[in-house]
View 1 (cartoon, rainbow, N blue to C red):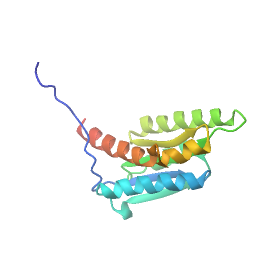
View 2 (view 1 turned 180 degrees about the vertical axis):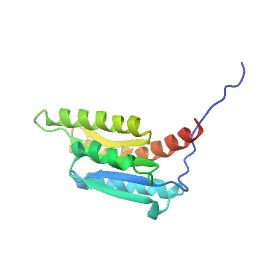
View 3 (view 1 turned 135 degrees about the vertical axis):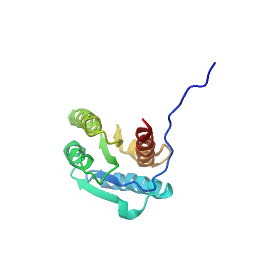
View 4 (view 1 turned 90 degrees about the horizontal axis):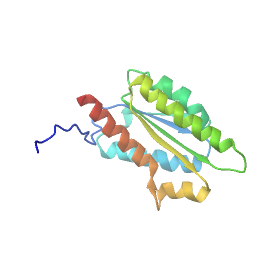
Length: 156
């Protein structure tokens, strides 16, 4: 079989500018996600002066801020970080659904890669596991996804 032309993105952050959008709610979890994302970007060639951190009250406020950030000409990629933890009411379902839909729409409308580092967990323990312990760090994964997506889109 003939070889297929394949486009892939390298994990290289040199020369790129990033927005990091973080929720203040559940800040003790979100701080770990921020640290993971920043460390990943720096390890792959980003410089601190090309990173802009924007904080919003909670995950529900993220899509609007993300739309403004993604529309800026000085931002190549956006990494969204937050933690929505299930409680005793349906509030979790509404917030989780709206932030997911909203951030996906921002990426489509702006053609700017948006990393989804929003934890949606049933328990605090699950959030802790996904913010740097047993289950890795979803901030790292969101940063890697944005890096790869930027480099793929450059080639398409």
